[in-house]
Amino acid sequence: MLNIEKAKGCTRLTINRPERKNALNAATGAQLLEALQQVEADPSVRCVVITGAGGTFSAGRDLREAASAELDSSLRHHDNWSAVFEVLQRLHCPSVAVVRGYAVAGGFTLTMGCDFMLAHRDAKFGALEMNNGFPAAVCTPLLANKAGPRLGLEFALFGQLLDAQRLHHAGLINLLAADDEELDSMEAQFVGRILALDMLAVRQTIETFRAARGMPISQAMTVGRHLNQLLDASGKFGGGMPK
Image (tube, rainbow, N blue to C red; front, top):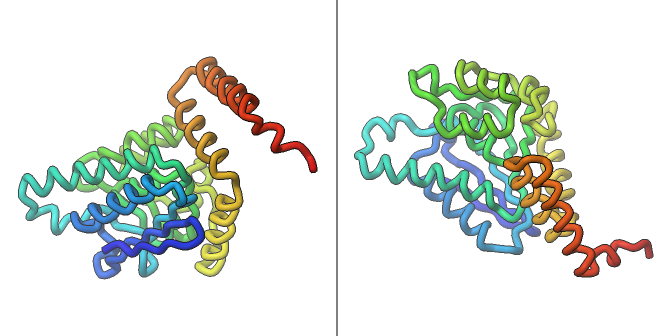
């Protein structure tokens, strides 16, 4: 089950299966995809937060359900799961993972798919699929994109449980909180900073940043130059003059 809250330009998505450590069954995965597609289609949404209920982010895919799934159901689940990350990578607004407890296997993947991550300092992470003899197939390309190559491959290959502090040092967590109260406050302040920004400028920055990661620096600078030229022609720079 997925809880959806909307307020002041922010959509908050809470995975709510605490009895299963917020494991993602087919229904919850489909709800997550649908909710993100709705965010994508709604230009009034300025930020999306993804978190988990009951002190846990997510233990990943519900393997109990997966073990008995028929082929068509399994294929549909994987199509939906891949589509979640395709939508996250093209959203017009920032996505923020807020993590308490465990974010492992598919839960870890989901945090890596978000633009930002805030976490409790005692949170635990890991691509634990390797411990069961299969690769973290979706998490691996995300780690290759977001982590340094040596650490990214280590995290994908060895399936170890990782402390929040290590991910913070690796640049994969933006901010750490000492307790739940501080994490709540941190989330409110971080989201508030996003909501206070010019939405068009946010979108342009996100799109330029994503495009630049896959380009040689010379091409990325060309994109930046063209964006400046368009902003100048539109009169946007004049709007930034001191009053």
